[in-house]
Image (cartoon, rainbow, N blue to C red; front, top):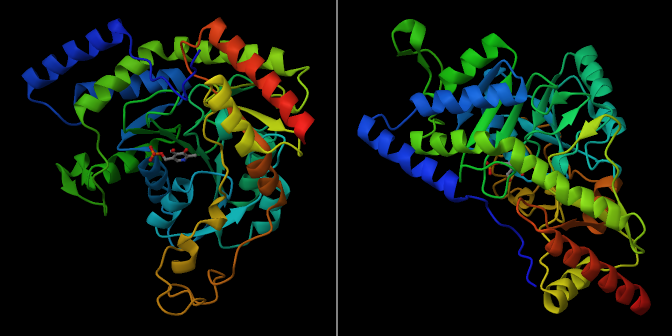
Length: 400
Ligand SMILES: Cc1ncc(COP(=O)(O)O)c(C=O)c1O
């Protein structure tokens, strides 16, 4: 039996809905930011409970729009080193400096003590990433810390469509949340993004910036330095379809995760990660820790070659602060030129210093593993994954 790394689920009904919708869009001649975009936004706002949902080109654009909408420019923003680099790139695209912080192995989220250490006067925002769909239990303490310091809490919710904590959805826990609809994500439109916020003024400003700065109140004159981060109606149509199936997709991922929770509870060589009290995950990833004497690369290769099970990509094996771009660029995204240490934007801001010292994130990056999780995995496939894993871990332990 072959268990692939991913299946992107578009069944007959969904495909038919999309085909019919394409015909209608083409007949309407309205191909960008029209009725489908409004429908997708309304459905996402209902789904998350956020007052506003604003569709945009992709998840990176969503994060940049939030920062620009809040007027954060020329400041420092704390982001985890354990994330996809897009979180940091959005900070730089909006004209800010990245300050990396450590993460806690228990939830893979930012380490709150390290945030506290790094909250200098220059910091305007903290970007919290719900890795794999896990919202950390300290979320209210972090919000309070940010409020006390006059710093915005922004959620990078690229992994967390439908994850909740104490009944509140990802994307509604700080000032705004940014979602990605990339093909690997819990909900996908191929490319696509969404901002959620309860702040009316921020939503209005983000809508303007998304559309080149056009101000409907000024008869469409331009009143902001905007961007073209609009979405095509064809993308939005797929978004509408995805929202129709969202609950079912998440329930199916949770079914797979429940299977893994049960099987891993007594499996030697691996430890599951319990969700924080009051949290649910939509399981963008199912993450577990391998014992320290188990080599992840060899385990993955045994799983693939001997059992035809593809374990998915990690979140993350390569930490952001180690990316080669920092050899050439400062933490505010400026070319270092020929001088390997000078920041050419704000000399003395710390961009020239090597950022390092992230023991929690290093542990996460080395020792976690992600099991296949996507809708439609059959019980037989799930059993095959867990039984193969039990055997592969036993032989790894025997050889260790
Ligand atoms: C944590 C995180 N943030 C941001 C992004 C960026 O999203 P997009 O690829 O839609 O721009 C991703 C996408 O993989 C992500 O995983």
